[in-house]
Length: 261
Length: 249
Image 1 (tube, rainbow over the protein chains, first blue to last red):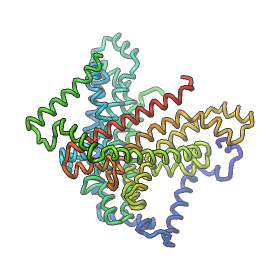
Image 2 (image 1 turned 180 degrees about the horizontal axis):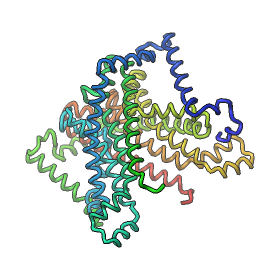
Image 3 (image 1 turned 180 degrees about the vertical axis):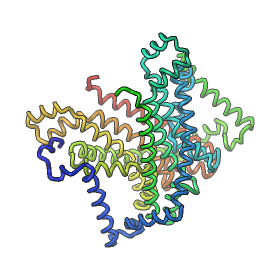
Image 4 (image 1 turned 135 degrees about the horizontal axis):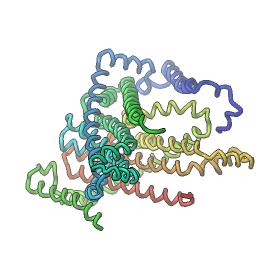
């Protein structure tokens, strides 16, 4: 109950950050105790220290850095290609109703099939090499970027364009000085979704077909029954995904400094 | 009308190009099977290979995981939304775990739960749970403070407060979460079938098509994925709109 703050329990006065660690710490303690006392076999639940040392081993041998690097490179390549195409298509559909009429139905049909569905298709088409990864990631980023760019441009109030017309802006000036800046927030939302989707797609494609990368570490750990390695890889996947999202959020804020609050 | 016709131009062009490329052998027909072969495969699969029972298996799995996931999600979301202590205790951990791409859980789940039906349902439920928790929590927190005051003046019990005030006012938000959960659950169903290839299902069908290099089968599978996803989305929107009729716009 939110009003419970009135009759504050003793722990409510703890700083927000402090109490947040209580649950994970308790879980970690329980996990350690269970591992120490052998409640669950280590093939099912390795001790937290083992996960830590597995991560450490991966880090020391350089495997962690090289696999993370490969995954990141794939995401950057795929995201760059996919979001560039998405921006172009979104702008084209947003600016011209004719283009929208022609392209939108096909785009919608294409977007209807989840990225996961396209992976086996692309595997037959281009094999399981590097192009597969980039294509899958690009597709994942392309759809939300195109959709949000399109919606963002359509949502620009017509009155802005009228003001532009008053200034006798050319089409290019109108696009560059009025429409695009006004559509920046939704476009950035799209880019942020796109990057999240791209990261998820990377994990999918690396799980299905890869001999290196963070997803491959998972598959490898699974085959060897090394749960500590698997859990370590999961942690790194979480951290990198979080970091990528934070970077986009920071860029978003920076780009919008000029806006009136 | 003009818009519909325009919308048909590109898809028809693409199909025509596909047919010519396939029949003219510009592209290896194993890579690009002619349309009629895909259609033939569809009929053959329905008649002899039990395509419909594969589809039914996928949908049943989807539904089971979705129900479990969204039910637990509503409960957790309600608790987090109504209790500050619970929120402070568990929300950061939940947010932390949420950062791990959902598919990355599959290897761990398959070790813990095997590769059978229960593992798949667990995975689908986990995928469905996340948006429901987030949206339910959000909706509970957005309940109008004035209404809460009125309810207190009327000396509502805790139970009444939850069932008569918080739940109804969070309903639109919960519906959004459940709608997302439906979409996530379907993708997760396919994902679970990709990686735990035991038992019937559309995902297994696609993987089998890839392994046997049968592009027609893969394409059929993709088509079904898209159609089912589309139908689920359409149905969810309709139900949502119906449920929200009472809401003043």
